[in-house]
Image (tube, rainbow, N blue to C red):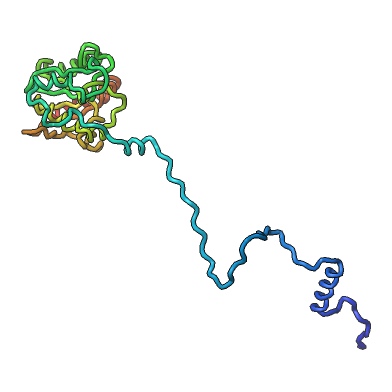
Length: 261
């Protein structure tokens, strides 16, 4: 077979084709390279021999404070009762001091609820604070009537009971850890020690945080160190939970029988 001598015009060298394309653009007046990326014409020329330094990290904004963090940063406040060296050394003096000492609570003195009962009581009932309907004294409202019914079933008369509150005056949503930092835990132990009861029944388990008792231990029989001797302590749900739950009342009754057996 004979090979054809016909020349194919598309059969040309790649380099020659590239040079031809460049000459075409040059004749059209385009003799510079263009890029879509912006260039700063006023920037200082880079030193090719210098090692490029990593750009500094962007500043990190500080975290926004939360109500909890603000509360923790704030001063917990002055100690309850001032210098403990000045705390009363008898129950009679303590009651008067409880109602008049300015450092124990803010606001008017008539908002305070005095403790009731005699020293050496068979049972001390400790509540966090007075109830909203305690108009005539500590536990004189609906919670007091429920307590009387409980004590009657337990075989204990009101004359055998000492009633005390942790706080002299009502406080909205007390933070027990903060109050402990203000010596309210030691003041409560001092109060119980002066009353010297045989047992302590704490109504409302939240107040146990004041003594550093964790929630998982709140349902166990406990011992509270109040000076000369440890005093047995049993914590229960608050009055509202006891009143509306028959199951809680039944469990409380069984725990009471085991505790006093």
